[in-house]
Image: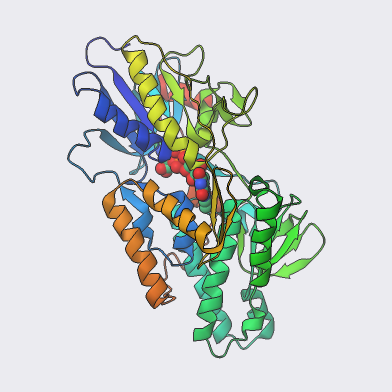
Length: 456
Ligand SMILES: Cc1cc2nc3c(=O)[nH]c(=O)nc-3n(C[C@H](O)[C@H](O)[C@H](O)COP(=O)(O)OP(=O)(O)OC[C@H]3O[C@@H](n4cnc5c(N)ncnc54)[C@H](O)[C@@H]3O)c2cc1C
């Protein structure tokens, strides 16, 4: 522990977990009790569950990017950058700033909340040709890309090119993939009316998953309702199917079908941030293994939570792990702040317990399925619950107002389908959007901390 100055609390990641933690630390600790620092590459907290609505143009990107500097009361020091390694022994976090400088940040307490990245597999062509749906840039890029396909198909005289530009593949039948396919299908369905030369019958969306069901957590009846809605809208659902290979103009499914397409959206699950591997500590399926109090057993002052940590799910029972959801992450954020404070004040930490409240799935327009507290809802009531839940979970009133205004405006005036040209001439790759190759190995972290020079 640093005895000369105040204890230093370093929070890594400004997502659901990190921001809730920081705000609670600011509220509950007096400024002379501890210094709070937050490392984050972006100046906002991203409301990820509404990303598919950004991709489909129902919401503007800014409306789900909640400012970290909205209030004068926010006294946390913010380092703009990403943590690329943590040395537990010397209690130093290595940070790559947004100007690409590498700095060592010492801490007394560290709260690791860097979230997750898109899980990929060793499928030929996948990481070069698939888009993820995890960052604001990805959502904005996909929107531009999809509208570009309509523009280019419209301009093309080649029927083969047209057909390939008008087929779209989404992999992953969880809520992220299902909402993405549903929302984007609504986008192309509405947009094609502005392209009188295009045959709407050529537009085809595929949603595929290796599992036998879409969103199994919804249960059989609601899951079938969701499938029925999507099929009615013309989305072709293929279960028990994945991708065998991906190319720039064609994707081959594991059942042998080759789909001509320029759009592959990959949402087949998440894995913990690569930052976790730099610790060299025990993990469970890549997530940092922590105690129910969210501290790292055997390492004083280290906490982890959210998508990057394997937090025991005490409400579910022995051996269960909290699922990677915002619902858990934001509650864990508040709880971990209390435990950091307890640890700092020499008090007893409390285990995290939360009983899942259910799931909401917005399929666009008035289509939705929701299961709040076990009650199965469809159509408008489900949509009211889905949007009401997300709206109330947005952190600031200005974000709430932006989202509500966007929803109303979209309902009344629809979309203009504007392609902004954002990064139009640069190949978009998963690792560039999600910075997956920015991290150090545990050896490089040690070398950096010991001053053995700048890692490559
Ligand atoms: C499309 C989609 C829809 C979803 N819908 C729902 C839903 O309806 N309900 C629900 O409960 N959950 C939903 N989720 C899941 C939910 O968003 C996540 O579980 C939640 O965001 C996890 O919170 P977190 O704080 O752990 O991570 P995040 O919210 O992802 O935050 C991590 C933060 O850390 C930052 N970061 C990453 N690496 C570093 C680094 N090295 N250094 C510093 N900062 C870093 C990131 O920029 C980010 O700001 C959805 C997810 C997606 C993608």
